[in-house]
Image 1 (cartoon, rainbow, N blue to C red):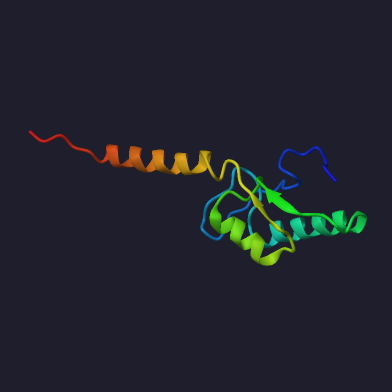
Image 2 (cartoon, helix red, strand yellow; image 1 turned 60 degrees about the horizontal axis):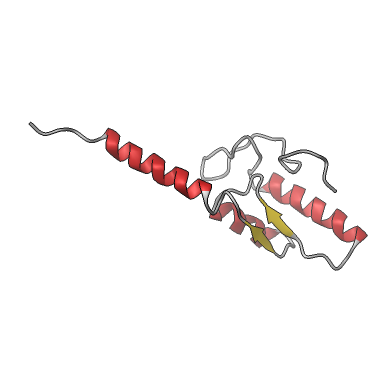
Length: 106
């Protein structure tokens, strides 16, 4: 099932409905949903007793995972960067932004 593509078949650049672009990978909702559903259906045509998890690629935020879990016939989401790297990036960006607003008195 693996095409060798590191983005798991997501070669598009889209914006999710929160306005954020996802690392050059697609998460415009419907196109990700269609791709995941097609891959799931293809896998289940070979073997019915699969546990199907979605990992990485365009699913970076909690809202992304929830969107897919609500619409695709899969069992769950396995997070990696979305659990450790991305929260740290957001926290650092926020903290740096606060420091840039800092002014010295006197």
